[in-house]
Length: 279
Image (cartoon, rainbow, N blue to C red; front, side, top):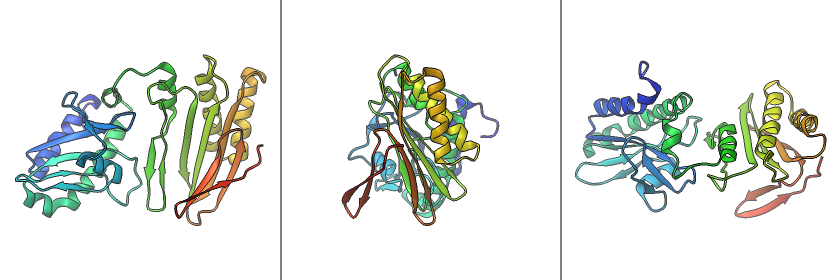
């Protein structure tokens, strides 16, 4: 893997897993942008729905799914305890006895595969093309490229977000980071529908991210985003946003609301709106 070109990393990964595990087949799967199906990255246009399929169950639950047949087939998620992006697992076909003895190892290897795919996606368009069912608008391309990742699984929390319509989203975005025991989350929506709106969202998210990476709190993040938007648009356009910081150990949260996004607490099956004053 260390010497593989980015555009060949998936095929090298598949070959390594096949050799190391004694598998008869390994397929590396990827979920599409709509989160309606998964498909093998290297094996044509075959798509498997996420609903009511073993591959879909492995992706949505992030747990190993083993199908009992004469060969033994396993669809494996990333490791259970690692902080990681939610990735679609490799699909491994091997004798049932091999899967039974090496299921933990397979799961750990799936974790490493997920990290390898994340790194590879920064250097090649292979994965980006494989995840698309159709062409994406320029505005949607801007919004998806802003995301740090679609979500994250950790022992203390699960974080997930999605952009819809996936191939034509216009101005909505979210951002997050885990730093020094805190989870920081931002949700942004440019409040107009001009052609420049996607750039407005990009400007505000990047300004807030710049403040956060400079060690500033959510009030300063909002202030820098506000200043950037006003400097470029002189009050003609605005952005709705909410910024939150959550203490991972205690669950205590602080939030700053500026505009339409709302905070809702789900507890024991009931929704509880959290009233916040616009800043």
